[in-house]
Image (cartoon, rainbow, N blue to C red; front, side):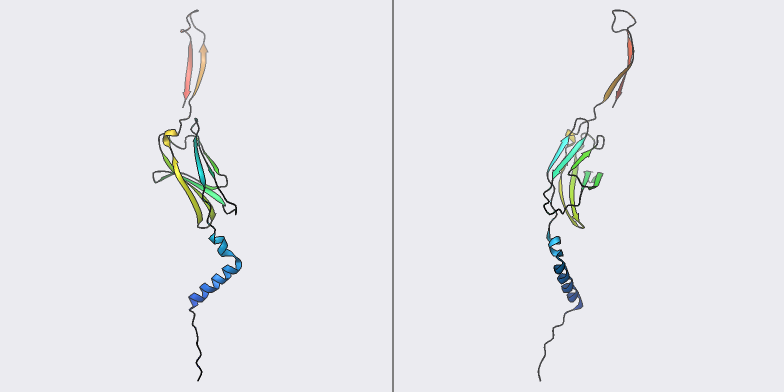
Length: 160
């Protein structure tokens, strides 16, 4: 009597082997194997009017990056989030960040679902400037006494 050898493959292993063969045929493992590029050379600049600008570089020869997300936190408390950005520069308007408060940022390159890469750093609160006040002088009246320059009047308004 002749013996025949059978190899049993469990359904879960068979499905996994089939899925792997299909993905290999479609070339998808190579797409998943590429890491999302990390933003680099982050520059934080501080304008005198209270504006803070974040600028970064990205090396992405394969064109994987679809968008950027910038998260700014005070400690672990979110302050502001910028999502679906396509530019590598972010201008944060005056009044958004408080002078004297240091903030943490994370710039995240979004390449695909669950394929992201982030650069982190700090925005130094000591470098955030107060918005410059505006001063207006109105209702100027001529001096009451000729030769006495301090006898006139005017209104001064300071807008901070």
